[in-house]
Length: 61
Image 1 (cartoon, rainbow, N blue to C red):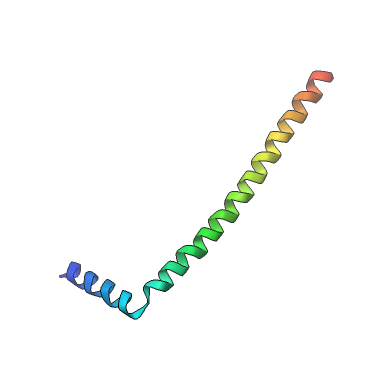
Image 2 (cartoon, rainbow, N blue to C red):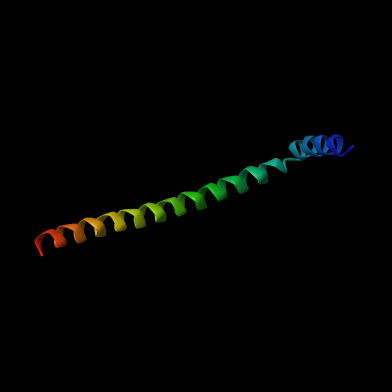
């Protein structure tokens, strides 16, 4: 019975337009994920540059 209810609920949500809010929530989450990805890439680049600076200094000193 719960399967029938969930199917009926999904259909009524689509008809009432409540599925649009779900789509908007996923889009906002995508924006947060993209921002976190940009921050991660920045720190990865910073770590990589720091590594090469240390290796070059170690070679000359």
